[in-house]
Length: 342
Image (cartoon, rainbow, N blue to C red; front, side, top):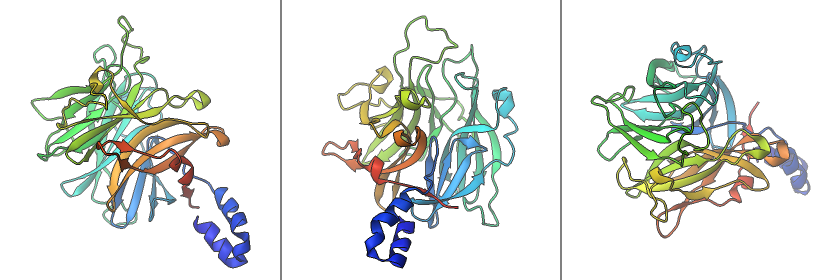
């Protein structure tokens, strides 16, 4: 509410309500599939969009558009996804061995003609002299007719032994976990794969058909001796018909099994609700989760009913119940209002 405060100071406390109303009309950040990182005193937000859209902020509220990560397109993109049209999906940002890694996806919509790549930079600050993203190429690819899984929506987590693992997946056979090499830019050899979450896919469903096993967007968050696996169930990108929502399970071992509150394995359809849509916010999900300044946050997108179901950034406090499960307050959906700076 920085604008509201300045206006009120100039005109007197009697116009605070008017100032707040003016601030409420400021443009909010419209993103899909948001991920976040802190480099120095600045937060950086990355999302699905042309060349990977990104923003910077000093406070996670006021966001400056910074353009795109890729000036052109990844050299390998059309090889993995012939219909690639400059729209890069579902990034994930991590720091490892003194550099930043930005994972990303290319795909044909509704198909598993897909690939996950990674690009690296010494810094996230686009004004730093050593800011330069260098694409490391494709990490994993899914091929229709060969693979019953989809190589999009990457997230990388480091286990307690310092080993990197990539979770990914959308629809089809669910969420996969694969071991990475020491650089975190390639799959480790010999390869090690696990299925960590999936939903029912009826027998004889054609291999080329994505639905109805509606699961995607994994994110693994380490906390208090557990690995918490967040995933999104339902359909995104459908306006008022969107059914996207977030569920979670947890495991002591990064490889699983990830069990929900009732003890059901997420690889057998388990998942406990974290948050779902309401009358104000529809189709919310594809979350990430972080600890910044000793506080835990859930970052996600949600469609605002009052704004013709336009996607908006949401940052919500994570609280932990007596049994160690993550909870969020749905009221925070209306409390958090981002501002896109001009």
